[in-house]
Amino acid sequence: MIRSDMQTVITACGFMLLGAIAATALLKPESTAIAQEQPAAGPLRHVVVFKFKPEATKEQIQEIVAAFQKLPQKIEGITAFEWGTDNSPEGLADGFTHCFMVTFKDTKSREAYLPHPAHQEFVGILKPKLDKVFVIDYFAQK
Image (cartoon, rainbow, N blue to C red; front, side, top):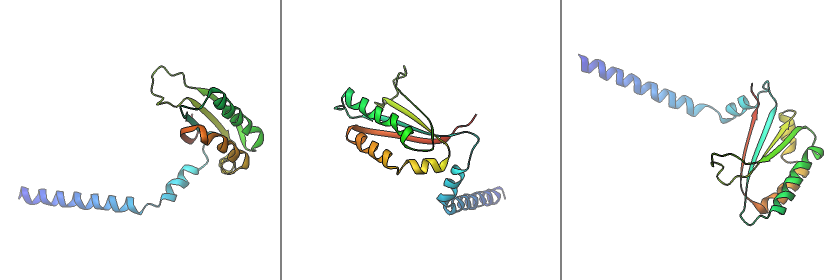
């Protein structure tokens, strides 16, 4: 009797697991993207972190920083810009040295920024000296 009840429980759990897998598979990726695009209480931040190639000189890196700093004057919808270099004592930067934060008025401003000719020109200056980039966008929460 106990063995039969245990088999029933195991079978029911198996069906629940299959149902959960099927439900997850049916979720559309755009549903998740839509949820992330919903306006939030805070501003839209665009964080970009660079790891330069070893052969990039200090002068070349400064030229890249200066070009990035000019983008807020060239592209509408950028409400704030700041940058800095890694000074963490933890030693976890993995070679990433420069961090930039661009704040956008809204999602549409970010959408206009990415293909904007001034941004594309900046990317052209950056790419030959760039080893890796890390980018994350988020709506600031408090």
